[in-house]
Length: 212
Image 1 (tube, rainbow, N blue to C red):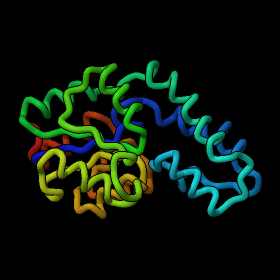
Image 2 (image 1 turned 90 degrees about the vertical axis):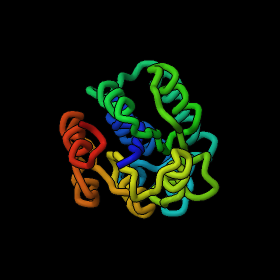
Image 3 (image 1 turned 90 degrees about the horizontal axis):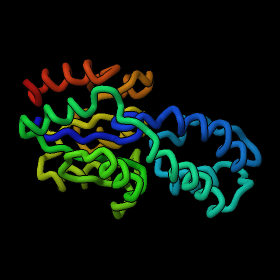
């Protein structure tokens, strides 16, 4: 293992529960006029692509710009208030000390990712948003193939850490071994490995040769 590619929300920063609640209580009820989309359908998907996905399957109550504004207004404060996931900073330091390449691979827009990197002064080699890629976002493989290329490591020699089924699908399609982080049952079933927390993730990475 020469590189670890981390999803951001729910893996690096403690935002996943916020987004689940905001989508369930505010965004989906306001946006969808008829139908009851499951959050699992859109979890891990870029919010711009989420609108397109919903509009193809449900009658929408909001225009695209109004829908995007719901996410953007929430993110404006969220990423200045959220915390790192417990144990992530130490894990990142251990990987860097071992010479392992590290990237953030997220469905969040580049400016949201940059805000997290700058706020926490994260030492990473690359950040890749699905919006940076000339192709579809997760669960398609494009963003993970781009991340592997940017860190200069073959996909098979990377490991992807994801908390959503769509993220695991994206990395798997890119030929990257996957770790399901946090205990989502579907992601765990799809992934090659599973880790409930930072300590368990460290154990997986040790087994894969990334840490001593």
